[in-house]
Image 1 (cartoon, rainbow, N blue to C red):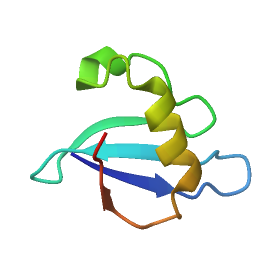
Image 2: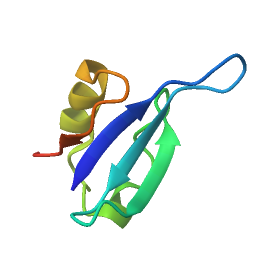
Image 3: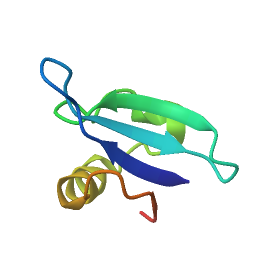
Image 4: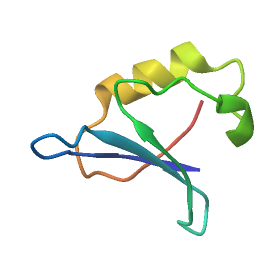
Amino acid sequence: MYIIKVKGKAKIPDYIQLRDEAFVLIAYFRADRPLKDLHRYGLEGKETELAGVISGLEFGKLQPLNL
């Protein structure tokens, strides 16, 4: 699974994208509210770790998500 942080413009907020191994978009959520419905993506119970990863992400850099 991969993660990328997308910079918003004007009234559009910053977003986080989760992509699978084939880079297909599997989740898209606001960076300021990232910890919702994580069980859908197999990340249940990893909310704190994911929040730490999101806070350290640079905009526009695709990175492997290893939790």
